[in-house]
Length: 199
Ligand SMILES: C[S@@+](CC[C@H](N)C(=O)[O-])C[C@H]1O[C@@H](n2cnc3c(N)ncnc32)[C@H](O)[C@@H]1O
Figure 1: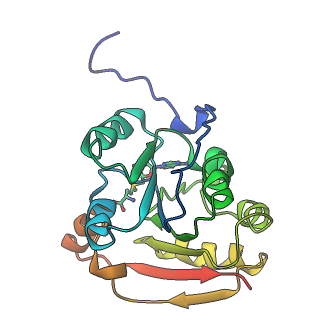
Figure 2: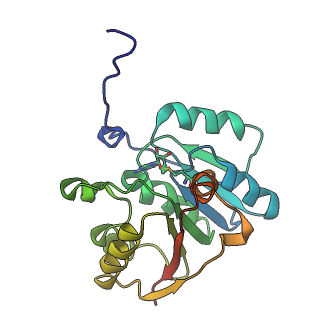
């Protein structure tokens, strides 16, 4: 194939399922869905050395770079695959070991603009209702985006779930801007943020 022509592969067609033994300890855990270059988790790790970190990244070449970046960090694991498909597989063993999943960061997820593609979004009503069956109520989701319409649609999705403790906020969590946010802020775009839990 001509090198300039790239076949378009939908990464969400990757159906590989992962299994994880857990970290073997009960340290609290931060999770990043769509970790990209991993800078957000890198800085978080520096601030919270007593924590474990789980990174999901669906694009395999990016996930490989993340693995290289964190190769000397025993409190970090990187999964190269679909976070939605693997969410319970990966997190349940950690819960079974007594670890608290403290926060799940969904930072600047792909908006999937088209109506028929919306089901590919990570946060959907269906996903949250399923997750509420096994993920403890204490776990907080943080959602950040530069897409106002997506922020509002996500609020609508939440209405039909048990996740009703919603707080909107303005500043980046722990003062850390993600790679995506840095680029968007440079363009002068607004950022929309919320966190949510269930009772
Ligand atoms: C718009 S970028 C934002 C990256 C990063 N969170 C940040 O704020 O800088 C979205 C990232 O999520 C990844 N991604 C999209 N869907 C995913 C999924 N279902 N599971 C894991 N990663 C996903 C993409 O490959 C991409 O790296």
